[in-house]
Amino acid sequence: MARFALSPRRLGYRFNAVGMIGLSVIVFWATVAVFAPLLIPYPIGDIVDYDYFGPMSAQFLLGTDYLGRDMLSRILMGARYTVGISLAAVALACFSGVALGMSAAVAGGWFDAILSRFLDALNSIPSKLFGLVVVAAVGSSMPVLVLTLAVIYTPGSYRFARALAVNINSMDFVTVARARGEKTLYLIGSEILPNILGPVLADLGLRFVFIVLLLSGLSFLGLGVQPPNADWGALVRENIGGLPFGAPAVMVPSLAIASLTISVNMLIDNLPVKIRDRSNG
Amino acid sequence: MNRHVLMLVVNRLIIAVITLLIVSFTVFAATEMLPGDVAQILLGQAATAEAVAGLRTAMHLDDPAIVRFARWLAGLASGDLGTSYANNLPIADLIGPRFLSSMKLAAATAVFSVPIALFLGITAAILRGTLFDRVVTAVTIGVISVPEFMVATSAVLIFAVYLQWLPALAFANEVHSFGELLRVFAMPVITLSFVISAQMIRMTRAAVIETLNTPYIEMALLKGASRRRIVLKHALPNALGPIVNAVALSLSYLLGGVIIVETIFNYPGIAKLMVDAVATRDLPLIQTCSMVFCLGYLLLITIADIIAILSNPRLR
Figure 1: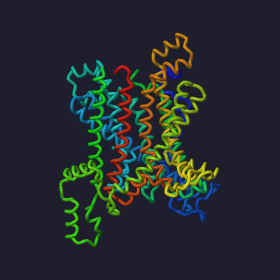
Figure 2: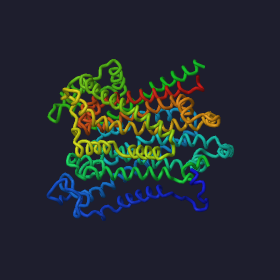
Figure 3: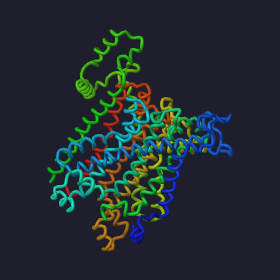
Figure 4: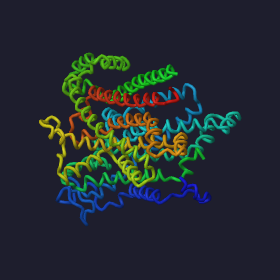
């Protein structure tokens, strides 16, 4: 903590080395997700190797999968699904969670009580189970996945934002704004939101990690992204047969997930206090 | 004062019951979203309209959703879990043995992971800032931020492929001796223990550190008490409530982990039963399995909350 206290204020945000590593890995995967079709050495559907579960070689940098397709290409394309779906879901979850949380804190009364009770109840359904049940009922497609993941993580985001907003709501400047006769929408948008934005963004990062893990888990169970498309979890599932041979095709997609989630954690743990704890400052 | 604590506990229990009602309604509603007519699906394309209508009446599918929900809930409460669509067996018979074997897995995991996690969590908190603490923290964050199937596949790679100590797949119905039992349980238990311990170490460490930051610990330090005395006499008794709370909360992560672990190791537990039911779209079975899971989860977090209430000395 003392480290950050020393950093000069005028420089804006400054990250330490661990945070920088985290940030660069995230930027790397984001770039890959955007430009994947230009980067892949082989078309993802083509069987390019006569052998299956091939080892790493100069021709196939990450080996080949259970049909002899190039793993590197499949992982680069998989980044699009893993990063894209998770990003869409986390944006949706945090937007609705934060909007509802702030409204509940400002409005109070029965609106707050009923909403809190209902969302807390949703929160006490294990997340994987929720995903399983919904996918069993309506089938798996990308919009369904994004919506399901968003619904699962909205209650957590709501709870977090509401707790922060309740603190801000009791401050003098909000009372003054209320006395001026400002409407709820103004209170939420101009008085509360700017003051909870930092912690909310840090929370968004952590929730992104949970969503990546849940999406991978669902895909691993065969309930997430459906063939012929494959995200990183689905890549592990389709190549699980190579596990007894120690094929790279099994471990490499897992490592890709781990690199993404661990870097997000590293970045968030090393965020400047200025962003992370703005509500306390 | 004791009346006050009792009120808080009763209040928490009432909230748990309300939550359970909302959860069961959500599970019911989610499975009601299935497109298509259940009777039509069950009878197949060749069924006559009369047969479909007959089955709809027999299954009470024409009743309003709220009536069917009430009937389903009443059935659950009285122990009538319904019949599986896929093979017409009573769900109670399907779930019973599976539930037992899942509980065995959970119990074995708890027996392993709780002592190890408590030891590591408490020592890491006491030795805060040392190399030991940093290694423990880094490893736990690592395990928490990777998917469970990665922990499982890594365990298989290490113990079954490279070291060749254990078989890669579990078949719990072919156990004849203690040695075989050990080999069958080893891999799922190792994987689950890793996942659960990581959570538990983090929470235990946080709970102990919070206690160590209190003014009375500072006072003990200023009085010149030894480190050992501070931890054993002053900190641990007060941290006990939060630690037990952390253990109960971490055990609730078992429910998520078990779904992946039972699938990957072919372990015949209730989670595998449910994943298979999802594949065959066997709705009554899915509903019942999810209620079992939600009930377990709710039970654990309610217990955790009640322990937190009871262990708060300010309420006593």
